[in-house]
Structures are given as C-alpha cells and as structure tokens.
Amino acid sequence: MELWQFKVQDLVENESSLFSFKVSAEDIDFSVEDAQVVSPVTVDTVLFRTDKDVFVDAVIRSVFHLECGLCLTSFPQSFETNFSIRYETTDNPELVDDPLMVVGLRYYVGDYIDIANDIKEALLLEIPHWPICAEDCRGLCAVCGQNLNEKSCDCDPSLLRPGKLADLAVLLGE
Ligand SMILES: [Zn+2]
Ligand SMILES: [Zn+2]
Image 1 (cartoon, rainbow, N blue to C red):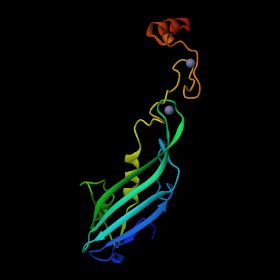
Image 2 (tube, protein in one colour):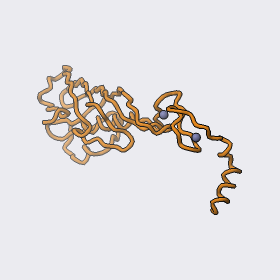
Image 3 (cartoon, protein in one colour):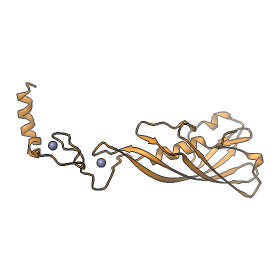
Image 4 (spheres, rainbow, N blue to C red):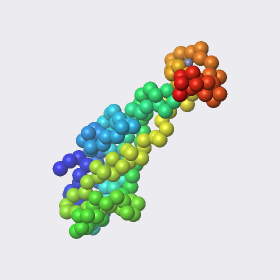
C-alpha cells in the first residue's frame, strides 16, 4: 500500500483520522513541462469515514520551478493548495477513472481509496498561466535579448516600430 492509499476498513467510523506524508513528483507520476516540482510535496490529510463514504480534506504544499514569462529565467515559487472530496464506494470500475462528474465526488472500488490523482489535479491547477519572477521584472530587451534585470543595454526601442521592421524586412530581402 502506498502512502496515498487508505484502507477504508482501517479508518474508524465517524471519527477523523489524520495522515501526513511527503511524496516526490515522480512518486505520484506528476510531470509537466511548464512546472517542475523541486521539493517533496507535503500532504496533510484529514479523513472522515461514515459507513461507506470517506471524506478527504487535503492540504498540499511544495515548490515549483517556473520559467518567467518576461525574462525567461527559472525561479522557485512555493505554493499551498487544498481539496475536499467525498469518496463513495461503487461496484463499477469504470466510474473510478472518470474525471470528476460532480465536483468533489469520486468513486472507489474495493477496500482502498487512492488520492494520487487528486493530488496531481490539485498541483496542475496551481501552475500559473503566466508566471512572473518578480512584480518589477524588466524582462528582455526586444532588440538584443539582454535580460534587463541583470544589466541594461543601449538599444533604441524605436527600432521596433513597425515601419522600421518593414524596412529591415526589405533589407533582408524578405
Ligand atoms: Zn522575470
Ligand atoms: Zn538591447
């Protein structure tokens, strides 16, 4: 049994059970191009079992390495996120792999619930669409590509005026 799997029978009915564990991105098979999870993912869960349902509250913390959308450098960003999901038992295995049909509801077959997919989904939702390394990131010079956070350059921004670009295209024979 993996850290992110719980045997329903082992949970005391009508009582909260607390489990905390750390996993790496590889452990739960999380890999996306836009964000590397660099430190272990800390998962704190509270499980509450009724007769056959299990309510899971999880808080997930870790650090992403992201690429700044302006200056293209890689930077760390810590994050914390959470989910609350009710797991209902079912005899139909097809229901288990279905995406959430009802928000906050999943199905499990047999004796175990497995929250790996929910951890992955929570991580995915945390990846910013447009990561920025700092609020005052100055980005790259559009002319020479210099990272302006590191040093400035002497480029003439008027070079980027559409007319000039058209001239340049003519010069280049395009
Ligand atoms: Zn930046
Ligand atoms: Zn420049």
